[in-house]
Image (tube, rainbow over all chains, first blue to last red; front, side, top):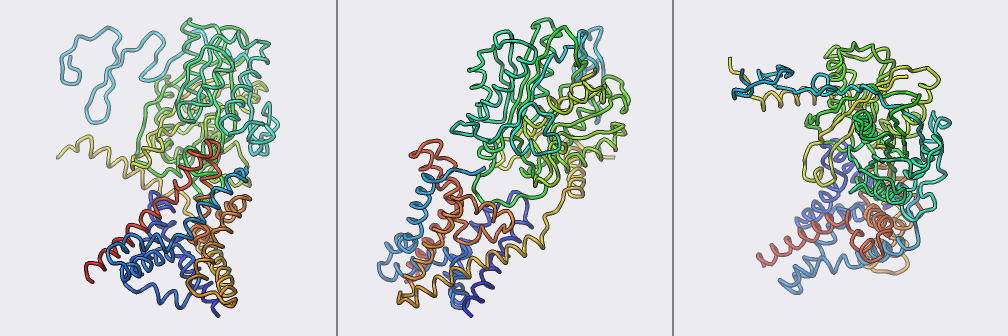
Length: 118
Length: 363
Length: 154
């Protein structure tokens, strides 16, 4: 069941992304759409509206980039409760630490090992 | 007599042309200039020899056998795409000279260009070739720009021999203008595939072979297009403008040439060009086509067609000149088209200005 | 009659040309794109769910399991990019391969791989975030802003 919901919710979020890419002006690139996703995820999370989506969709809501925005906001809010003002600055980075470090390390290693293929 | 609101004393040979909203433009033709933008050569420079080199994908296209060399991979044994591109250009120039039994030090002058920042490929190729060199940038119209400049230098009596060349490399262009190779990108149907190809021509003041009889230098035309994945729409108006001026300046009818070929408008740009020329009543007959459309097969997943300096250069120095030698085409008008944007201006939201230059080759 | 000035004439020409372009320019196959974006995106998320479920079944807490799943997905994205498969998937899948976190990994790795020819320090080092950078900047900026708003209301 959780698999089906992950598939449906994840697929739907990607579908929204595809519509944004194809139906907007050419100057709105996929890169812009990703910024919209992470920002929307962060804002919805702050309004308490993203958590219900995570409860239903599981990975379907956390894996798309909007889920990363949710992660950042939740981390920030928790850190604010614990540390006050300092938490506003440290919370997001702390929550995303594993993912960002992984991206950097794997990125660097892949660059060393692999070459762009034709 | 008044010109642009100021009284003028007019020289004997001045020509007046009314343009649109009541403005007058005065042109001062030299002895070889016709009309607004076209030059005619008293001593048409000869295409003494030529060579074309293409990449694997181009080699699998419909004209594979008509190119002199199909390189086996995109790196050519070098470490970077850029170094491979400059090797490709160097080898193409050497091949063209060899075909005319010439050494590189007999070349006199090299006019070449490519798409890379600061003409990296051409500069390094020229360094290895050690021929006096002028680098040219006309985006994808560079080959025609080189040919017409070389022709004017020869017909003007400055040089007896000039080598004109241009090249492009798919991966070096993508890296500079668009995305890294391994990024998952979904290209829209109007996008084009930058060709990995090079072409070089040895022009001489005497001898036998196809001749360049006239050339039209285009104006930059900007019709407000800003989609970097649709160069064809940006360039078609420039191509239409130049073709129209060429025919008008020389007083030719649209059926004068056996074939009018644009550089790399692609399917979309070519269709738009047909419409634009139709409105002016100058649709070339019997036929007009485009190197970008011709270079690849539909099945090769190239969107609207090929593009890049090498597209036009290799099609000319491969299939098109081959057809001229076989007398299948006697009069050819080659219209190189270039989209003059840079990654910086695109990011800043500017439109894409374009240019088109034409040369007439007759045999 | 008012004679239009040069700018208005030019704009009218451009507008007319734009409608010609829109008539001729092929539209992207929207249904096909949406179908594949949905399917591939859904499958990637379903795969992540499988990983998440197995980790939690193995006793890991929710937050840690979620983090580890993200790291695994980032690794998979990097691997597929390295062996040259991710860009092939992306051609068909579109947003289905861009929106999930594997897509984030793909742009980072693709940039790093491409620019290593400009050196391992400045080539890879400075280009690694050239495309992913904006998402991180905006993600951090917005979440920090939300945190600051909360501080104000506390």
